[in-house]
Image (spheres, rainbow, N blue to C red):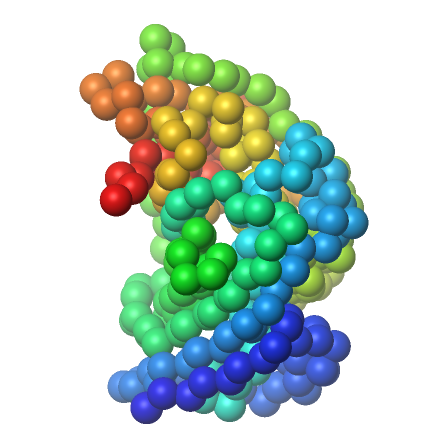
Length: 295
């Protein structure tokens, strides 16, 4: 079954947040649920330059009129929210964890043009950690697809008590392009929330994060991804690129972290970005970058 909503421009975020706060949906969907197809579209979306500047500032990005690679994720947030509050979306949005984000940036986007944006969600995967949901977002200028992403969200299942395996960072000195310590302030989550519209309580205060079984405030995964992209984009292997980001250990605020970009010595069309603990031994974020073929 398919459900579709269409808006002229981006819809308001106020009413959806009221719905989120009053939601009686469960934390996990019932066993065997068949996920319907949900689609939300905005036909005429324009870039607000003041909003773009605030986003660039909080993510530590250069101030210019070329849209950052992850900016349209933020712009699409009102459409994501309409999916989350749809009666057929089966779980609470509060407490959902962002696991993975794949961005395909096909071309530099004209900030003065009009975009058509659409979000689709039709997946539910059962995993040991919980249930995964994919939100597929696409942006078009005219009839041309210029940007798309797959955001994978997790509705967490309470831990069985076993400690998860922690992925260790691997370093090859000869392939390192750039390395830098990144500092995240205690209020980074709140600042990014006001720009992105993502007010998930795990990102706001220690107490609200603890209510969802985190020890303290957690940075938005998309903030850390945007911060790393900004440090690496001058080395990307082309304008058309795919960025496959996996969010590993939570980034607790405040904190210091090590960003590193590394070339692929076997393939000049590929490179890796990582964000690790200050010691450099454990991973917070891994981004696989590859050039896309354009027909």
